[in-house]
Structures are given as structure tokens and as C-alpha cells.
Length: 193
Image (cartoon, rainbow, N blue to C red; front, top):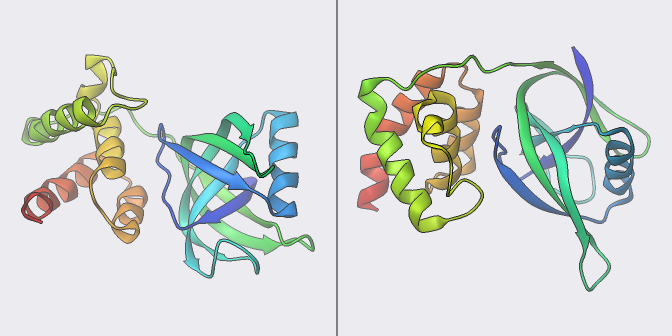
């Protein structure tokens, strides 16, 4: 069990994924300072109830640890950070500090290396085509990653036009093959829309 500061958002972050965030509330500025100084991670969770700004939101029960990989200040003086997802976690207990910062005791999960199964090979091909068109961080990924059930599932969960509840369900799914099977069921519906 580990204690993490949480950044509840109307977004779902996956391991290996990337998010760009604007940070302006004092509680999050303090969190960014502490994480940067100590080279520590924080947790990103989808908001189960509430809003991103103001009163602390209720986080979903699963999230992903986030490592700050870059930062900048925009012309209005607002801090921007780029975070990369590291590891899935399950929230066990949530507390709100007097600063309004949400912290949680979490169990961290290690993804087991798992090779893509033949019935999911179509998804690896689809991902390759999407990345070829979309570009971005994973556009020139080595071929070996397309054999990883976890990596293919996470990237498709980020890139396909899913709603955040669908993404949250995929994040919570412990088995990478089950995650891919869910995606395989949704792909025909997504391509028709």
C-alpha cells in the first residue's frame, strides 16, 4: 500500500499514455512542486462525482500513477505540465487534507507481460494504421510493442472514440486479453458511427 496525492480529472490516463495539464489551483501547484522536488509520482483518477476545479472531487476507484516529464508556463502565467502514465492502482481509502488536496492509500498493480493472442491480431493492425495517421508519441513504436497485449490495449483505449466510462472500464480490467476482447466487440460499432 502506498499513499498518493490524487489529481481527479474528467479524463482517463493509461500506463505509457500522456496527458497535458494546466495547473493553477494552489493545492495542485504544491503537489507539482513536491513531486518534482522528490521525483515522485501522483495519481490521476477519473472524477466519479464533482468537478475539476473548486471543491475536491470524488475520484474513481482505479487510476494510474503519473510522472511529470515536462512543464512550461503559458502567456497567461499558468503552469502547464506533461505527465506520462506509469502504473495502474486501486484506491483503498481517500482523505482530504485541510488544503483541499485529495490523497489516497492505494494498491499498485504490475502489468504482467502478455503476448497478443491470434484472435486479437486485427487490433494490432488497426492500432498500427491509427498511429500511422495520427502520429504522436507512439507513431514510431518498435514492432515488438505490437505483440504486447497490454500495450496494444492501452493505446487503443486512448485513441479510439470511446467515452470516459468505457475507458475507465478498460483501465479497471485486470486481464489484458479481456481488455482486448472488449475492444474487439466495440470496434465494429465505432467504425459504423
